[in-house]
Length: 98
Image 1 (cartoon, rainbow, N blue to C red):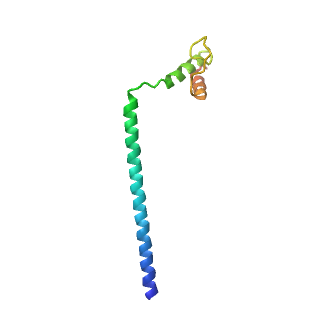
Image 2: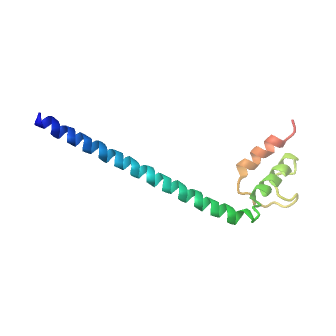
Image 3: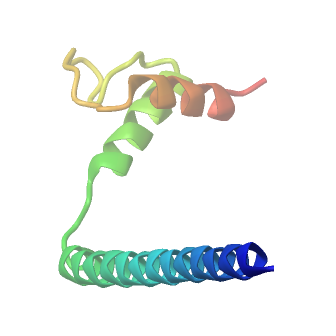
């Protein structure tokens, strides 16, 4: 009987330790999520006022490619300035007639 009581106390202690660990992980996760939300909010607020031209460069390349002018930003100028060549080709294929 005495051994059963000792085993029961050890089991309860182990369960308590596990529950404490779970509470700690949940708390750390909540803090990490709050921090990520705060940082992303600050960055969005700071960067929202700035123009971001990369999508428009890609769209222009795709438009010229779909219209048969080639993979160029300006017709007659052969320069590579898009950062997403595969996406540009996919957009051009989606826009191409037929």
